[in-house]
Length: 180
Length: 422
Image 1 (cartoon, rainbow over the protein chains, first blue to last red):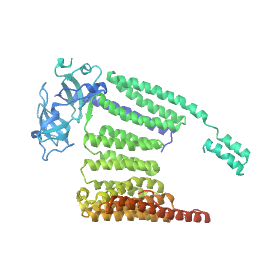
Image 2 (cartoon, chains in turn brown, green):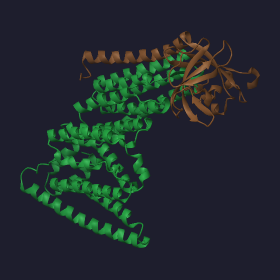
Image 3 (cartoon, rainbow over the protein chains, first blue to last red):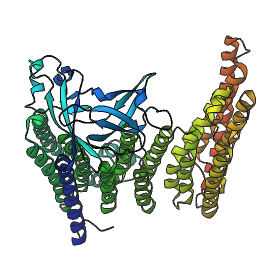
Image 4 (cartoon, each protein chain N blue to C red):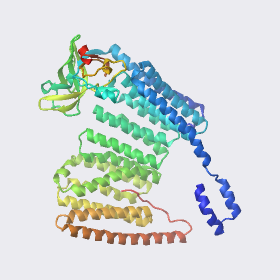
C-alpha cells in the first residue's frame, strides 16, 4: 500500500477521481444518447395526483400500460410477483402505446412496435400490475404540472435505448386545458 | 490517560508514597487541561453551518436549475471533496482527510443517482451502481483508514438491497467485490470492527439472495458458515473471532427458533431443502472449517458446529424440539467447558447465559402445557435463582484458582483457544 506522500500515490488518486468524474459525465452522456439513438414511444397516464408536489419534487405517474389483461401474458409458466418481464408495445407514429404482449424473454418487435422492460407488481385474477421504474417523475421547475391545481392526465414521451436503458424525455398534458 | 483521572487520583498516590509531590506536578504538567480544544471546535461548527446553508439553498432550487448547472455542481462537489481530503492528508490531519475522502465516495454515489434522476434515466441492471462499489473497494486499498474499509461494505449491502428490491435480480458482482475485495483487505490488515461489519454485510447479502430466490431459508447457512470457515483460516485469533461472531449468532438464533417452534411440522417443512444437495454443501463447508481449525490449532472450537446439526429433517413434533434442546445444552456445555479450561471471565459469563437460556426454553417447552400457571412461574423462578447461585459460585472459584496460578507463575497461563460468541 503506497503511503500518502509518494508521487505514485498522488497519481493513483488523481486517476481514480478523474475516472469518477468521467463516469458521472458518462451517465449524463447516456441520457443524451438514449434520446438521440433510442426508439420513441408515447405513454398515457391516468390523472396525476399533484398533492405530493407540495412536499416532494416528484409525482407518481400511473401508466395505462401499467395494468394489462392476463390474456396478454405469453410466458410458459404463470407470471409471479416481482418477476422481470418484457412488455411488447404497439406504438403508432403519434398515437399512444398499448400492450401487445408480455414476455419473460426478450421478444422480437415488428415494425411500429417497441419493447419496454418492467416488473410484475401484482397478479390479479384477470389482470397483471406492472411497474416500469419510470413511475417517479421529477417535475422540472418550468413544467406546466407545477402550475396545475387539478389532477391532469399526461402524455409521457419515453425513449428506449438499444442497449437497454430508458428515460422520460418529456411530459405534456394530455388535454392542455385540464390543468388550469 | 485523562487529565481528570490524574487530578483526582494523584493526591492519593502521593499520600501512599507511590510518587513524590514533585513527580505529581511533573505528571500534571505533562497532560495540560484540554480547554483549548473546545475552542478549536468552533471553526468546525461554523463551517458545518455554512455548508448546511449552501446545501439547503441548492436543494430548494434544485429542480429549477438548468440541467448543465446541476451536473456541473455535482462534478465540482465531487472534485472539491477529494481535493479537500488530499489537502488535509498532506497537512497531516488524517482524521479530517480520511473523513473527506469517505465523503467524496458518498458524493460519487449520490452523483450517479442524481444524474440518472436528472435525465429521468432508468437502467435494468446494477451496472450503474456497481462502479460505486468498485471505487469504494479501490479507495480502501489506497488509504490506511478504517472508515474507508467499512464504507464499501456498507455501500455493497445498500446496492445489493436496491438491486434485489427494485430490479428483482441478485448482483453476484457486488457480492464478489465485497467478499473478495473488502475481504482480502481485511485479511491483510485484520481488525475486529471491520471483521464484524464485514460478516454482517455478507450475511445481509446472503439473506437477500435467499429471499429473492425463494429458496428454503436453511440455504442461508451455507454462505454464512463459509464466512465462519474463512475465520478459521485466519492467523489472528481476535479478528477471526469477530468474523465468526455474526454467523454463530445467526445459527444460535435459528437453533433456538427450532427448539421453540419446531413442534409444528408446518414450520419444519419450510426448512427442509433437498437432503443430498444441502448436506453435501454443508459437509464441504464443514470440511473447510475443520481443516482451518486443524491448521491453526483451534480444534477446541469445533463444538460450534453443533448448532448446524440439521435436526429439521427429523419429523416435526416433540422429538424434534427435544433433540434441538439437547443440542442447545451440549453447545452451552461445550462453551462452559472451554471457558473453564481457559479461565476467561467473559467466556464463563457467555456460557452461563447460554446455559440459562437453554434451561428456560426446556422448562417452557416441557411444563407450560400441564403445570398450573402460578406454579409454573414459581418453579421457574426458583430454578433460575438456584442455578444462578450455583453457576456464580463455580465461576468465582474457577476465576480465583486462575488468578492464584497466574500469581504463582511469572508468566500468565497460556490462553488456549476460546470463542467469545455463540
